[in-house]
Image 1 (cartoon, rainbow, N blue to C red):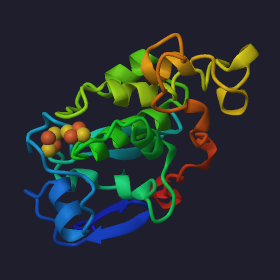
Image 2: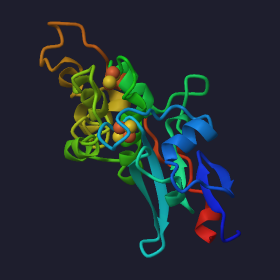
Image 3: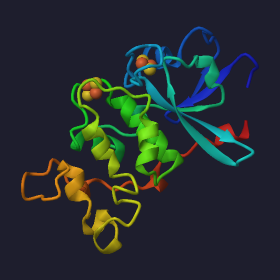
Length: 228
Ligand code: FES
Ligand code: FES
């Protein structure tokens, strides 16, 4: 590795940039140079979260990989040296297979115009990479930097509640204390329409039909970065 080279990974692919522009943001680099247009330019000043991506680093003292949701509109591309960047394109797609984080926001009607959706997805994804069993307070903290002009947030939070201990998936919240993904979810009724009586109206979605989330199947941190 030469001293004047910027080296980082994007969605598992190694990038070696010899002429990095010190004024270029990560968002501009992703969209213009790599053609990854999933992260959106909303406010351009860190206020809306539409540009959110996940940045991962290996922390030698803790001997673990730390993941952060980052506003790509604010991060200079030069700050990414020896990091791994994951964009919404890197976790799943309609052509391949949607990641559960993408599937659940769609099925819960948490995406309308869709402009905020990649950022919402990546904030949730970064949270799950650090903590596969979050609770609702973790989830609310994770979305503090994401704005949505369309949905009123409720369908997003209700869909993503299914990842939390309160939502049942990680807390033995299924029937008789089992897993809601295999034996139904006692929280289904309140997750779907906030109504304790499912007979009063049709539920918008059934969490028990969601693809299971298996943290062991996620993309690994590039081993090469640990050696550098
Ligand atoms: Fe709004 Fe980056 S574009 S926070
Ligand atoms: Fe339109 Fe969130 S779905 S801004």
